[in-house]
Picture 1 (cartoon, rainbow, N blue to C red):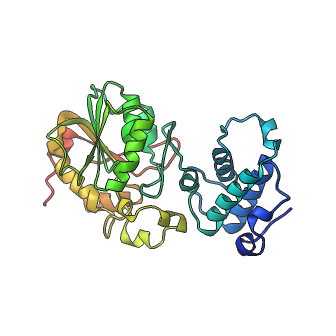
Picture 2: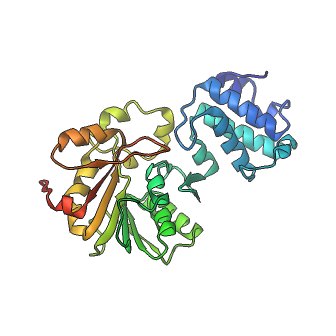
Amino acid sequence: MLFLSPIQLGNIYPMNQLTELKTIRDYIRFATSQFNGAGLYFGHGTDNAWDEAIALVLRTLHLPHNINPTVLDANLTKDEQTQLSTLINKRVHDRVPVPYLTHEAWFAGLSFYVDERVLIPRSPIAELIENHFSPWATGPINHILDLCTGSGCIAIACAKAFPEAAVDACDISADALAVAKINVARHTVEDQVTLYQADLFQGLPEQKYDLIVSNPPYVSLEEMGTLPSEYRHEPALGLEAGGEGLDIVIRILRDAKQRLNPEGLLLIEVGNSEEALANRFPLIPFTWLEFERSDGGVFILSAEQLQQINLPR
């Protein structure tokens, strides 16, 4: 089996000269071998080298994931070979996540455009959206707010799940909102999703919501120093949240009660900062949610519970 080390891959044997590789199957196999050999980190839509290779190769060739297996033996053109070789090289050498190379990420069964201006969608909140936030959301959902929207994936998925609801989505980053705008147009929800450049609630209209949902920055300073190289391609603004990773979520907890309807819900992902948040506020009755397809780190609070919380400014 042909295998090249990362150094050989980019220098001694330029990939566009690997004439042994002819077919789609060849490139999927080769990419898998290179990804495994390079010890890459998988956490942006896949969890293994084989699925990563399939995602990269098929998306680059504009082929569906449910392709007829016989097509895998089709020969590639020279241009296609060069393009795939370049992208595999970037994945191995530069540790660029595949969604940034293909400009596509999947969330809640929907395809989203992504680039390095936004985090790559991967939140377990997708599962909640697919289930219409059952069993916690028992009343009508007419107005939804997505804080720290990034690519707009949560807001757009909510719009698709609740087609009668109005969805506001905000981010402090103008770059992120530019990507979100692409995705709003891509999914034709311009009449339903409104984008705002705002620092959390500051800069939003005076509107109360039935549901406030957020996947805010929640990575602690210590954890930032240990992240795999792949995460270094993502905007730090979307990751960093102070010493314990709680700076943003505390601000949301402090102000959300003024923005929720009486029967409203607040739902926030805090990832690995779950323990720090629970220890910091032991009297807050967080309900920590469980998921079938991913880990936890997501809590829900009712408007009534939030009314009992008074955090200093």
